[in-house]
Image (cartoon, rainbow, N blue to C red; front, side, top):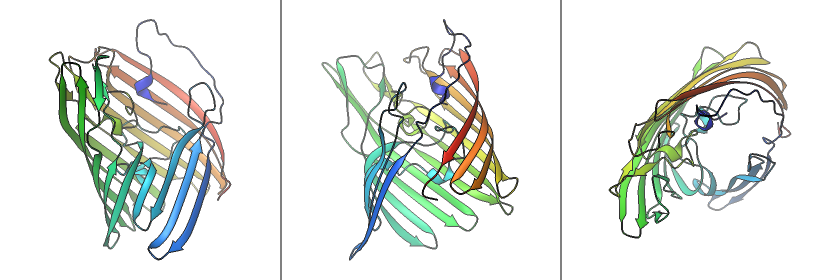
Length: 321
């Protein structure tokens, strides 16, 4: 359920649609062994979301970890998976930081539940307004620094990322530095409830958001051939309430906003909103089922808007719990 992909205006009209699938099916493999340099871990995981019209294999994670050093493919260090709300929808709020990418990370333990992680990750300059004679250039890796604090009540994480966005054309070339920050975390409320949140902002940060990764909206190439990194900000908040040991609900709201820019097409993304309420039953650790109501709204650069509602039911079996 990705609001940024919803159709708006034109020849589009409301159409009801029903679908059943098992694309969220995952297979994982994990191996561990002790070494003189710390524990060595290898992890491999896939699902079947590789295509929109079939069950194509998609790699989610493939990495090795020795002690505090990670190398391979998986979640960006800029992400905070522990802050993501509990949704049946596979995508989650569009204003959350989300990216699967190859990289190298190293974490430094600072004591009392505090860590600092430095990372270099595979860059990908995503440009709007580039012609066929322009080729995106990735001169430097995306570099991140993440500070994390874990306590009995929850956690806080602050991440920053720096990027180099560039292109090379037949007659022109340009480069600009971009980046942004994200503050996220979780906090216990009472004995069992949980508050989850995240807020991010920056320039050239679209690649790192759930709604806009792969959209080509990190920056725009103007008529003068110069790159303009696009301003972006957004976030989400989620609240988990346990009605009993077996029943829980989640209430979630998220929003993501991209700057207005005359060089962007009128149907390009401007803002999305995302809302969720669900009821989930887990009678056993290996069995979870529930119903979820989702609302999404998309606004384009022209000001045109569209919205939609989904009712989703899910049944999950987990064979490792």
